[in-house]
Length: 267
Length: 283
Image (cartoon, rainbow over all chains, first blue to last red; front, side):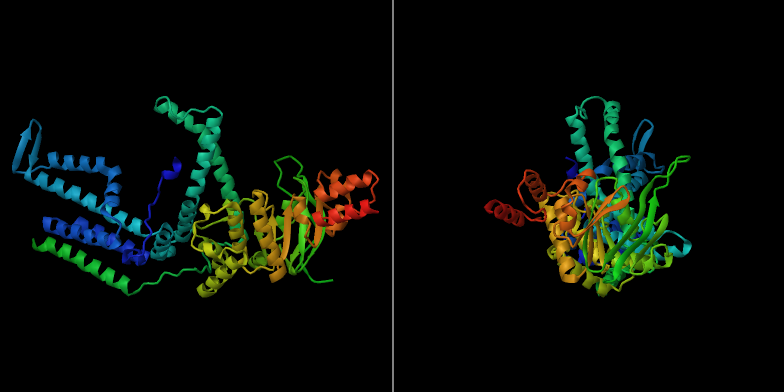
């Protein structure tokens, strides 16, 4: 049952969206977020939604998968929307029930806020859907390389992240095994209230943690045996290289963002 | 005598003990010379010090007394640590806990990446290493979807990518099913014969020692027996007293011998054993 969990979902494919350098995609998402926060007209949001739609189309991910990504945050979206709708001060009151009143400004704010969050989440998901976790970590490491000068352990963090990703399936498998073992000894994970269920997890978590530490120890020795000694003098099998399409995509992203900011000035 | 790839001189080792307690010696003066290109099996029951011995071969554990030399380099010389570790590669018991990356080729590339090998050269080494263990078709696979034997062969490839002169397998077959064990052993034998890589196989499976050039039996932190498989396995009583079982064939011949049948104990393979019994009975 735990095998169904998908983390850092990635839909393999061979479209332009997949082939772009991970650094390009990260930068594009940053640009997109900047544009979203600068947008303050329906036209701007329309443009940004259209941009996302085109990207989705190119990536062939399918809009349904993206919408599914919104599910966990529905509550936050609705909550922010309502908050903005009812509690934005303004002059043009459209409706009023007791202390709740909807102003024209409120309606506008609520709409923009909801659009902003939805586009932001879908845009970010599009990146994780089209980029494998390893190349994403790789891209982040290269992108944040300059921070090494500030003694930020960028390489170490990237290594931790990729090892964590590597061990997710292993640990899930192990959890499954431990659960079966405990069930065979009469453990009950289904019945009872929340507290009882949480308590029932302890006999799973304890062995899982112990074995995770043992694994970490063995992995560390194995890494040392393979000459791991940190970032110093390390090379890569796959070296990230910007290509024509990356420059084109970045230029396009910059133009659109600039356009959105300009719209803010003129409208 | 051929030149030595690994040489231990009066090697002693103890793990750090709790405060107040006297540290117990795990290795009590081991003198061992492993020749370049040989296939050596180290046998011993649990706690005989065989795994500890293996970990001193590439400086993961440093001797408390005595010295370990790898291709002439002292393992206590920190400046040569990387050279030592890329000379003696080590494969461990649990395949899951030594695979670093979540794509096969990335994992095999891990060691050469650490050594600062240029990208193109890494590519060649990865392809060569995977071909050498017969895993070429799995370049882009996720390791957790492979079988135990396949994972262990990836781990061997990961070590091979350092182009080591010697590979130490520390109970590398212990967690595998018979099929996986056979896969790994035949890959290792091929590396030894075709590429001339020295292999040190640490195990408690007697049968894995049959094809070795040399068998070293560890007991209580010391080398108890040392010789060709024939020489070692004929010492049935000595092996039993150390808590080791002898191979089935030798066990059968030994019992026949004790029953008065005149058979030699030197037949290790099933065929040789059958022939020996046949000729003894026919007499």
